[in-house]
Length: 339
Image 1 (cartoon, rainbow, N blue to C red):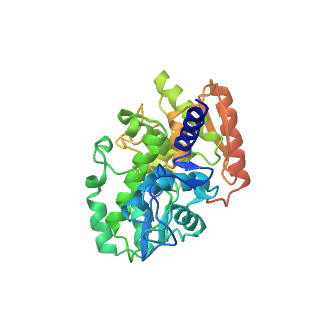
Image 2: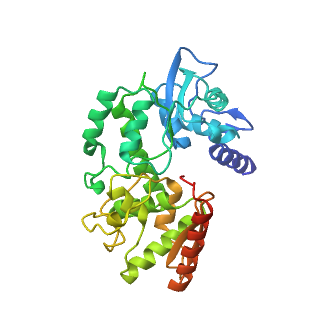
Image 3: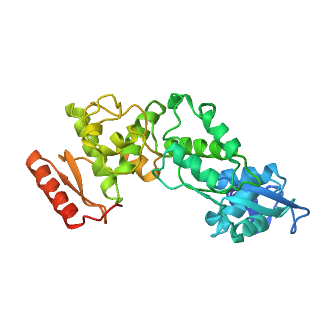
């Protein structure tokens, strides 16, 4: 009986530890290669990849013998969570522990394409061309962006080209590859943020407004709260960044005729509700803020210092007028400011 109990306990311990007993492999251990491996092979670790995704990439390229062996090595290496996305040079048929260690050691050049938050589709197109992609091919791709979009976009690409640094360059990625990466990353970010599919476009519209208006991270949820409360009350949103977008510009002062132009469907001083599409391509912080508006009573915001981006919030119209006066004083004190 004692022998049976001991054998059972050791068996359970071995099973719990992926087939290893006191650090030694048993017949229950996951299949694993031995040694440093054979031929060199490039593996592409995608943006946002977790351990499971990395293991699948290595299995597909015959770098590791089994997913279970990889998982054991990944979980046992404290540097594994720092594995960078991008192209890694490894070897076929490596031991899982050596494969994970090599990936963790690699310092990846993230590539030459950085897309900042808040750019429009047109600005992103120009940035791709400026980074060295063929202009004619790039412009052709951007003329038919609908094919890269999920149905929730309604055929309009604005807001769906996610801003970040991409491991891409003109020698090994085409303009269509780059656009595909951007739209796929937008879907990934929406899913990770927990946004239901039926709200994808709605959240991107709100996030795009926040992205263009917010200069400080702490202001984003508060702006989102103001947007939601004004919508609930049936007020116009009064966001000038949207008015400007509707004129075809992203900077410069609005004229009185532009502010009074009801034919501009993005004129949120006149038209109630959200604009018909996003007005920029927002980052994750703005997406999170749009999906989780801050609670409160604030109904207005005013950027009172254009140089620092300082923004103040108000609940009543009188408080709002006080903030507008503060802004006008700042403008009077900085007549040459053109930022």
